[in-house]
Length: 545
Image 1 (cartoon, rainbow, N blue to C red):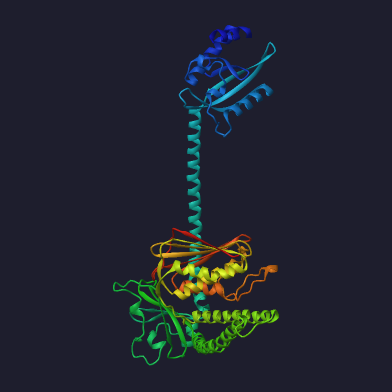
Image 2 (cartoon, one colour; image 1 turned 90 degrees about the vertical axis):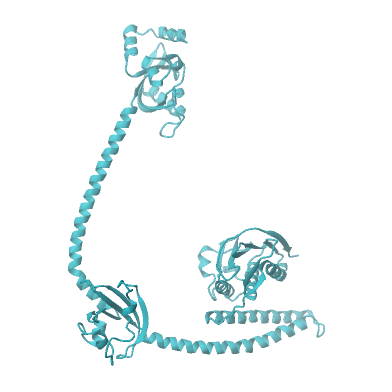
């Protein structure tokens, strides 16, 4: 390789070869002679730069002494080719480059490529200067400069903020007292402050002054009530501070004023006054109209309960008779029916069932809202109940040629809850899924953990749009399906399910994608505590024919 290198130099036949060679060898920068992107000569400094011998450098590509990627993320091979091409096009090219030494360490360099012709062939001289330390110093100086500039900027901003804050505080202090007075005077409620020890009234608003006069400086129990020979027996002062004299928070209570006859809801709190003493601040809102409205609502609720009880008997009894007798006629027990008679009786039977469901839903919702729904807790096997409900719902799936798939663990799942209400929730969700599914079917998944169970009802139906999700679980609220609005219902089923699940200590929710399907889920505690987590399963498949 040395012989070949010397041969190359002899071919070049440079003028003043000894002078140039001396400069070449003595240069403090690494110098490389390149042809066809290959090193064909280098000076001693180049070997020192790369940490290897001259022989290890010759006939190697610059990529051999470069990392795979340059700092800008471009591969060294591609970027070296680009830099060489620019030098050949322009005659020279200067750029930064990261080299790798023989030991794998990286060095930052400045590279100058110069192109020249010799005997019809193009050559490149590469002058490479190690700037690693300089770059470190520059970076450190830049960081130090940025740090100092940031300190100066932050301190300047801080001083400006403090100056602005100081000015604003001065302005605020000048107007705070008047602002506070304006605010409390505009509030349509009793507001006053009284000394906790002496009961002296220290501050009142216009509401108080209009009804009781200017009572500032007087005793609260003498001015705000009548017939008192001492502090009011219902005074809350002792409730507002603990045994160490520290405020305990807000105390809310109601009372009827003995002077005006108004009913007030009072919010009392102890706090430190501007001179350090403890005072009671009371904000009392007139609730006279609310109490009258409450009494009327309670009276109306009693009437509603009586009406619902009557409706339960007056509507359910004839409806059950209609359903029962039309069912007997449809079975042919009272004689053969022709096709038209069967059709008409079927319509009667279906409409009566629908009306009975509506009545039951309305009554259930009314009982829940009135807090009159009684829950009967007992221990039962949830997964066995699931199988029974799926079997009941199978006929609905068969009518639409849909499948019902039940997936739950093999072992029993005892829970303590209201069996009838849980069955009502399950049947409602499953039938709902079947109703809104035209193809595919409904999958019911039951999972359990030590303290809770989770049931999911997945359908492959039309799904629910994101903007319609808020309408779910609200009474009498139904989603508008536009041209597809052929689904019957009262809009009460999901609302009742939600109320029942919450009464039983669980949660209910839905995940849905429009055009793909929906998954309604609910959780229940296995005992009478609330909890969540899930695992395990078996498959049973029912398919409508």
